[in-house]
Image (tube, rainbow, N blue to C red; front, side, top):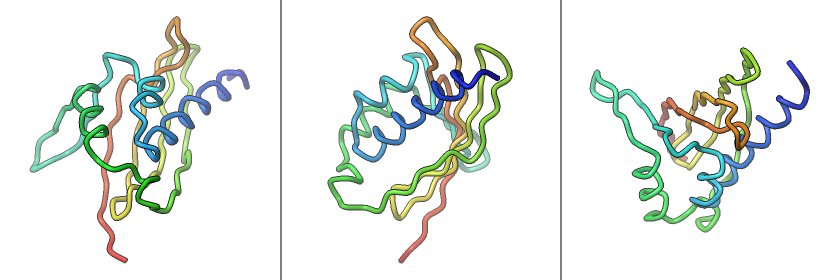
Length: 126
């Protein structure tokens, strides 16, 4: 795959990481397509949250940056299956919660955007 696609996707993921850490809905909106949803397993089922509902949660909580929490976010794996579709596995944290995210991206007329996020987290003390 073209190095330019990798760099473009990495830039979107960095915007996501920055938005998550800073609690910046503006940065998250630049990374996530308006129709995107978040999914996670809960009580044997799957929860589904539209982007705007997630943004409301982000707006209502103090950011990790403002709380002085440690930052550790990184790309674990990237799979680009063509000029318009990719999947990126990342690790990030909002201590005491540590996340693994599977981010599916589509290339749109505005560039690469995250269209779905499937995640899990574990809580660690200490």
